[in-house]
Length: 574
Image 1: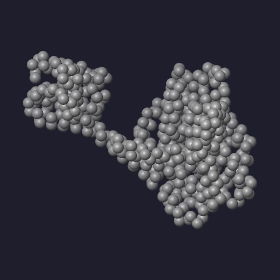
Image 2: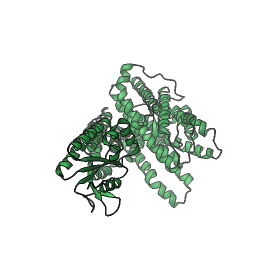
Image 3: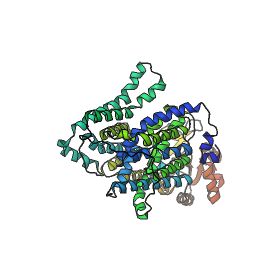
Image 4: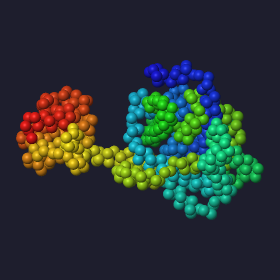
């Protein structure tokens, strides 16, 4: 892929588009639309926005991503996690009316878009690496629970006050169980049952009937549309529109051009939420994009994805929508349905345009409980509590990051949970690397291999110690390493030579270099020779450039530990 087509991938797939791609793109675009119509309205409800906002977020952003994205299968649009974060971020402003709420949502989309585009231009996609797997896992599990609890008001008919704290919502519902609307509960239960059957049971039944795979995918993924149609039918048939909460009027027509709030004070307050959404949204998008691309041995360009999703969010901001990202479930369906190029995304956008122009009157009688059911079933798959035990058994430090993130998101807030989780993870990382594993090694038999004396039966020599440090050397661990080496010399007064094996050292910073310089002098003053072995090329280049090798002496640097031992032996230094 040339530099030009990396920036504008459409030049790649449009110029090389083949006729056989069309059927796959067309089928994938239609199947994703079947999922996206109800999902977009449901996720807008989760964000506290009117249903048409979710549909708007599924038009222009999809056109843009189809042209700019490097993934063939990523399905961009409203997603549950981002919708939750939008609602949580805007609630801190206590907006007085829907218009103010919507203005904040589109301004948030603008900020998210700017952040992602700038990150892409600066090739800063690496920043998402600071969201470690334990932190992300803790966040997703907690966010899924928060999302589920937030929808209880729509599943039960109990009008709960808006709050950032999940436990307050649960307490309110338990105290007002007498206000349950049983018609709402029945419709919600029926919808959830159908959705779960389509998700977990129908596929097996269709396989028993020997149904072709090309038909199984659209049928099993059509559950959201089925419950929407069924919900509308029940409300109309039994005249329930005055007895349960329904969606009501959904404006028809294309979204108008909107101008986000251009107030610096508002931007400052929204910025923490925007940064969090930009990172989490990109993390979710790039993870599923890479996973699907690997199945076809294709490449996804992280920084190009940042630009594509960022521009898609800018498009959302100016068309009355809110932040978007790549949806995991829809992307998997898009891939399975045969999406070959970005045209599949554009076809979905066209069909969503037709929906908002001509079909919105059909959603008037749609029960809000149905939309809540779609959200509930979508987030159930995100909850995996077994990961807590698995992580705890493998690495306690990672488990602490996971637990801190999980409970902070659950009981305090989304942004605080992410910030605290990342902070704890970094602190634990620094603590872990500040005390690297240092092993005394000896020769394994007559081989050229040298292993830890505590793990293997090896040969050592009384006047020499070979020590391997299993970490890069930088300011948090430099003093620790110096203390370990000097302590070893003190504990072994017969030692005349110390070989430091650097096979695991990928980097030496200025602080560690100063320590090594001082160590050379201290050991010389104590009558102990200091040697380096297995220094990696890039590290050696820097040590030579700064003059450390001249200070140490090139004759004291060896390609391998065995070479160091043989050289010392030949010169009678044992």
